[in-house]
Image 1 (cartoon, rainbow, N blue to C red):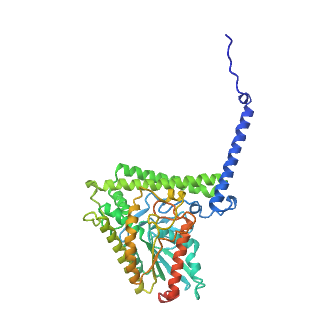
Image 2: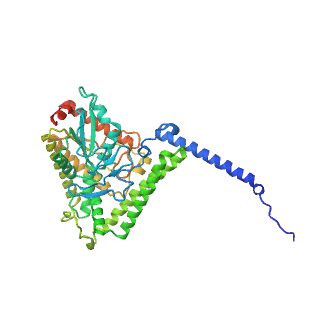
Image 3: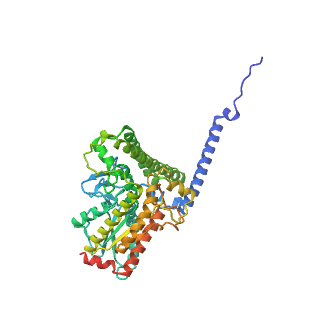
Amino acid sequence: MKNLTLKKPKFLQNPRELIGIIAVNLVMLLVFLELGSLGWYFIRYKELFYTRSQNEEAEKAGINLAGIRLNNSIVERLHPYFGYVQTPGPDFRPGFKYNQAGFISPHEYPFVRTNPNQLIVGVFGGSVASNYSIFEIQNKVLENKIRQMPGLENKEIVILSFAVGGYKQPQQLLVLNYFLSAGQEFDMIINIDGFNEVAFANENNQSNINIMMPSSQHVVPLTNIANNSLSTKATKAMIRINDHKTNLKNALELLPKCRLAYCYALTSLYAQNTAKTYREDVLSFEKERKKSAKNKENQGSIVYFYPQKKELSSAQLYEAAANNWMKTSLLMKQIANSNNIPYFHVLQPNQYHATKRVFSEAEKKVAFSEDSPYKDAVKLGYPVLFQKANELQKNGVNLLIGVEVLDSLPDMAYIDTCCHYTPAGEMALSNYIADGIINIFNQGNSPNNSAQSSK
């Protein structure tokens, strides 16, 4: 038999030719990746990648960082009056920080008026109110509209956020009373809420904690850490959450440095997915935390919570939550009136409350989850809030029912399965609130009057 010898393929016989083929294919791949990414960027942002502004990359890329403190393993700290506040320290957004009072702001509190043209606006509520404050400071929607009113052309709006993710009544009421007693002046108060009042009342009810107490989802993990009573699974979830923060921080630092479109596209998609996974692990942590709370060995907390004597039925729960929402808003209005401060109450929109908005398939994937712990609470709780809204309006509360404000928005409005909005959604909400405030002022006194009387 003849010896059979296998011949090398031609491209293996010439290594230089092989290297050339690989190099050409790599270059072609990079070119196609870049062209595809340029098209993706233009369709998404309506501008060329190479001429983009590199400011606020995280928000522009649609990465939801609400409540994610990249430099802190534990975001909140227990507070003797408010339940909890944010840990003081820097923020990734230029010009912002978590001040010594525990709220995100460029200023320390109490803020002292530095010139007579300043109108001080206090914003109260949860994470939606906090995001509204940040958006207003960056975009000055309210200021630009107030300056169109006669005699107010030179006014400077100073937005002070007293909102923290997870806050629900009576926390807004308590925070307002505290800072008024500490000497904080206000020319206007905006309270944005509704979602947290029903969503976290339901969470408290399931955790056997009185619904008037701060959100069990936020406070109980802090007390569990203090008591060293977290389960192994909850501890592992916390470790994963910290890993996600590290990965997300690295991605966000790379994002503005990308000089090629495919680098930006891949990095932003990675960051979005990391933020999504972070929130999934937060929910996993919360489930494990609830399991630990049911263990009698973990009931000896050093922090006292008023217990829920028995779990309320849905009808009892949402009636009680809506009554709390109504009464505390009336108290905020009465306190504001006694200090000559205009008070505005905004009922925030949420995707789980059905309106005429038509969601695209892409937005449905981002905004809805069958496993959401908030879905049923909003569906059952919001109709009861509407009933109490009539009482608020009868009692003279300037109530803006903003549940339909995103209905006509052609772009995506939501960035997660909870309650937070895209920049387009934030702009729609800010315009709605500003227009509502201007309309109310046009029917009565100018905001300038309250500024004069508060001095």
